[in-house]
Length: 417
Image (cartoon, rainbow, N blue to C red; front, side, top):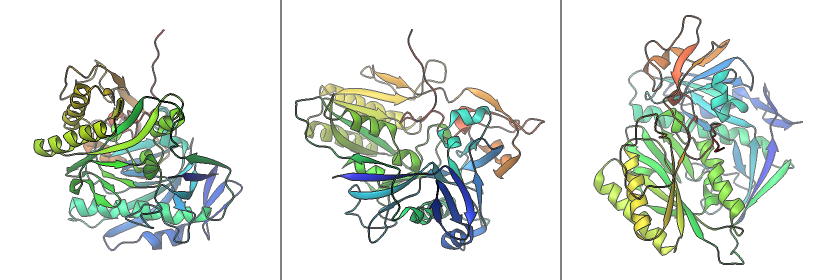
C-alpha cells in the first residue's frame, strides 16, 4: 500500500459563493454547506468561523475533523460513509492542512469539551492553531442520545467531505508519502496496539462505518487511519479523547513511519475494541496478544483512549505480551499526582506520562462564544461554580479537547536534567 497525501496549506478561511482555495485562503459556500448537511432532527443549524488568536470559545465540542478527499473519480473518503473501500490507504488524498471542521450544539453527553482560540486555554489544545469551520447543530427535544450523536457525527464528516472538494485538482504545497517497504536489515518488529472505545452509552468509534461494538480485534495498515477508516463517535472525557482529526494525523503513527527501516520494522496497527464487559475484554485482548505473536513482534506501544474501564484492557494486553517476551510501552496520564489507574499489573514497568487531566486553570472570558458556555456546569472538568464573575471559567484540563491525548498530540512536555 502506498498513500500520497497532497497537502494544501490553509492560512485563512472565509465565506463566499463557492468552495474554493486561492492563495492559501479557503472560501466556504455557507449556504451550500448548510443545505448539504441538513437533517430533519436539527432545530438549529449554523456555521461560524473561529481563527487562531481570536477571542472565541467553542463549547461543547463533540468532534474535530480535517477536510480530506480522494483524488479519484468517486471523490471518496471516510470509507463506509463515502467512497470505495479498496482505495482506502492507497492512491492520492488531498488534505486541507490548517483547516478543520468542529461540531458543537446541544450537549449529547457530559463528557464533551472546550476549544479556546486564544488565552491560556489555547495553549493546551492543538485545535486552537487551526482555521475552524464550526457546525452548531441543536436537535429536537426528546431525541434519543444515540440518535443525537449519530446525527451530529454524520453532519461533521459530511461537512469535512463537502469542504474538501475545494482541493480537487489543485497542486499541492508539499506531499507526504507513506508505505512500508521491507527493511534491508533485521530490525525489532514493532506495532501499535490501537485501542478504540466500544462501550456504548456514547463511548463508541466507527471502523469503516461499523460501530466498534460489533467488531473483533483486527489488523489495519497504518495508511488506513490516515485515509479516514476510523471515525470518532464517542463522548469520553475531552482531555484524553481521540478525535477523528487525531486518527487522521496521529503523531505516534507518523513517528513509527519515520523510524521504519532505520531503527524498527513497523508492522502496523492491531486495533483492539475496548468493551465494558469482562468476557469481551478477554476475547479482544487475548486475540490482540495472539496477533502480536503471529506477527512475531518484539515490542508494542499502547496508547490509551479514555480512562478507568479501559485500563483493564491496557493491563491485560501488557501482561499477555510481556509473558510472551514482547516488550510493551504504555501512553496514559497518571503521574503520581492525579488519581491512580483503575487497574495495574507488575509487568507495566514502562509508561509514558501524557499529563495530568485534573490540573485546574482559569481561562479568561471571550468576546464570542460559539455554542453554549452554560453547558460547562454539567461537563467533565467543570461544575456549577465554574463560570466566574467576569465570564471566565475555572476548569480542569479534562474539559479541554486533546489536553492529555494518548497519541501525544498535547503541548505538555517534560525533561530530565
